[in-house]
Image (cartoon, rainbow, N blue to C red; front, top):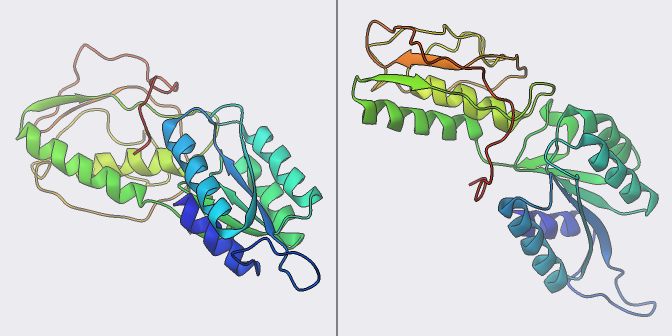
Length: 251
């Protein structure tokens, strides 16, 4: 993903496959790759792919990341550095809406900005996005889970990334999964506003895809039965907003 995007960005900014020299040479295009962190194996692989592609195509690539997943200010600093260096573009997996104003500043300065993995909100914050359809991915997983349960009761614990910011990967997977299970998620703009118990006769077969929206709300663990009637169990617990660790990869 990052490798293809880096090459595309270089081409869009007028780069060539050689570093060039002298008056007749082509100057390398300088761009930044900014990932959410440098620990998650998914982002480590993304950085490596981008570095390899940059080296092979004569792109001057700077690589940086937030101190941790969710570190918006760290990414803002890296965006501002790219602007100050006079770079031509930025590849970013945004840590949240807190980076939007810095991205706007970069685009106003003439940098071409590509979002990777995580679509920003709103989508037109960047020039283009390369990302998985996370709502569809969640829906397919939910459909598989419902079919596997085959009408048996289930307790579903939704473990979300944050309770203080909207991250599209998070709410799209959350809402997509519940939709695939056949659960009415009501307002697609909110995590956790579905009924806490209940059931649906279509849980094992329902297929529905809807457009992702943009909000979240603190919620609690949500027990569900995959058959009528859904009953509230005695095993409820507070919904955690910390990430499971260690995750082998995002994909």
